[in-house]
Image (cartoon, rainbow, N blue to C red; front, side, top):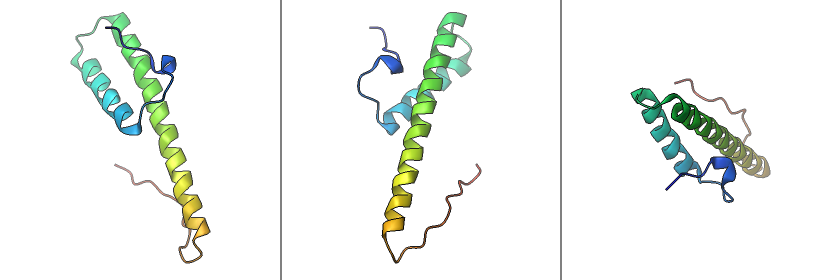
Length: 84
């Protein structure tokens, strides 16, 4: 059964599902055993998943900031991601 492209799916994947699929793609690409066309297809799908995940994280960050702004007792600090 052929996998649908991310852009062809009607319902977006959950963040966790996207992350799992992205990790699987990275593993397949790092194996070095894929033919060129399949590797390019996997890479394209991985980029789409990464962008979808980044968008989900940005939306979650905005929601957290909004929640903190509406709470008069919680100060709002700028979000600074930790370097890994």
